[in-house]
Image (spheres, rainbow, N blue to C red):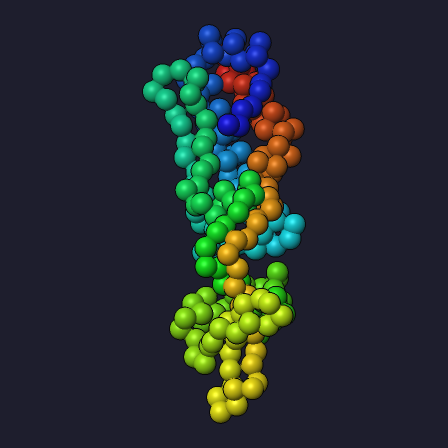
Length: 201
């Protein structure tokens, strides 16, 4: 739960004197802060390390913004930014993924778009290993891999994926951290909204 603080004395005065103007000014402030948060989040946490690599049609599109504008009063007024993406929660809080996991090898730069592993993104044809041709399970140094065999020469193999039963994800999305870093901006913006409302008396 994210909360904000404003100058309570001025806020109480504004609530008593100009509820309509106050609602309009606070609405503008919350709208600005919501857009600013998403923009900053995208620029600082979804462009690669120290955050994650977020494609414009990927995880970033899963974040939605909703304005709360009650018919009366301002108690429940604000903006909500949320996502139903389970993988986004894992990247934010950290956790463990279990199952028959096929993890692309970072050394196989040809599997990624420009920049390689950690910079580029996995190419479409490598997102479904089962659709690749000449792919087989091999065991090398006690680890299981999915490897590509050269047609006509099965002695030449290229490991593409390592098979794992579990992967530990460290917290690195930084959504709440982005909001915390905006503390001064949000306090100034909301207090400015209250001040502007009072000026209309």
